[in-house]
Length: 105
Image (cartoon, rainbow, N blue to C red; front, side, top):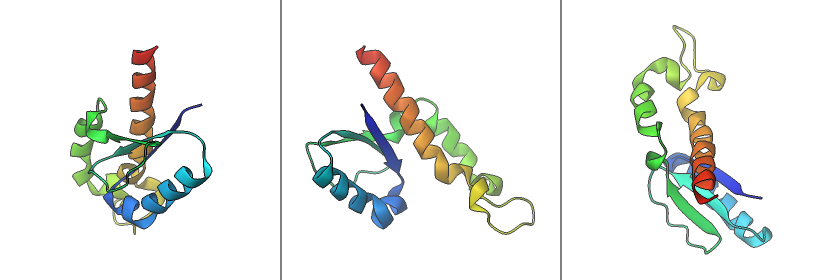
């Protein structure tokens, strides 16, 4: 089984570091962690990967400047359900891990 996750810089500070500590302490496995910026977590069980190296991610980031990509549709208040940019990291992490798996098969 392969474990994969991702988080942005804010997510790492809010919950990511604690998640990684728990993972390392309670899981007898390795995890691929896709990040935008280097993080200070060090463990042999944690393999840090750059989201920018996943095909299509950098191009997708160009859309982040549009309010609709960040949960603001027309004149409506923020709605997290439409915050595409916030949640896209997980999908790109899965794409990166799948491509790496295929390359190593």
